[in-house]
Length: 378
Image (cartoon, rainbow, N blue to C red; front, side, top):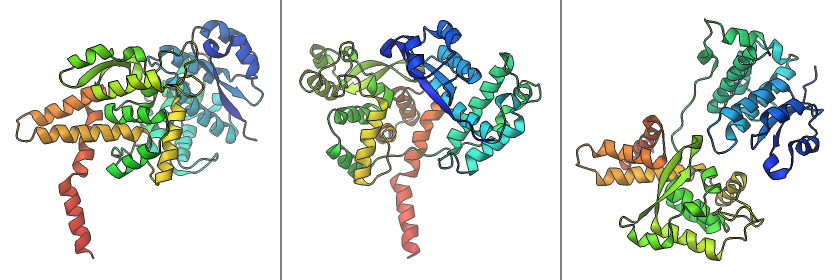
């Protein structure tokens, strides 16, 4: 059987037009009952086939994910949609349909993700493979309870099912730090207005989407800065998962940002006046454009770093500094880790401890030991 072509379409009625106009423009047909049920959503992800006809089970599952998500972006539905596309293409390639999916087929899909190259991609990282398998498991459980049964769904809801063993072991990598030479090279090449955005990422540890949605109204007023005795200003932002968090920003960076907004920021389009970082079109910088500019500069200096590695660099350097000033003070080492957890906005301390391990393996003692071994082998 020839592989069926699937694609993920994104419908944003609040920006581009009515739901009906968007469906027609995207070539999506037979969409009426979804329009009524999910029209309050700012974005709807739909899986359609090569004829533009929705594949209803994954489309309704993604709509349910969008409704239950607490995030401030549509990343959950988009990520789940990409995972389901991978699964749909695999199922179609082996000549089956979703209602014929079984536990064995999911195991073969997992092996394909971890060990093979296919569909125009390189082998998938274990973290991505684990996510895709987990999404497929959630999807077929939902299908089994909502009128789209399959042998896989029946197995997953059976008392003896164990979804965890269907997921590959995740290989955890240490955070990637940028060295002084890399940072100097990157910031010497980055263009306006990305340079200031990247400075925020490095100095505060903000993520891509947090940079993209940073608001002028969140910045403290200029007249309040002299009263910040510790040199840090508090900025409230929306973080991953829809949580509100306080970010501590050097007042010098706040002053630079306020000056940029007054003198250098592009003229905003109506409705986007409150966004800090705007492109030439007067609209907020997208996450893709932020990553693209960073990738351009990184390629020019010959590094494989990504924009998210600025966050890693921030975390490890802050932890190193906190650890340095706490030497000899009982209990301060643990407090340093808790301080970093607050600064990073991590819900769990285990996430923050990754940076502690990264700091341990790059300290001077480890470097000296490796250099000694290298010299001994010469």
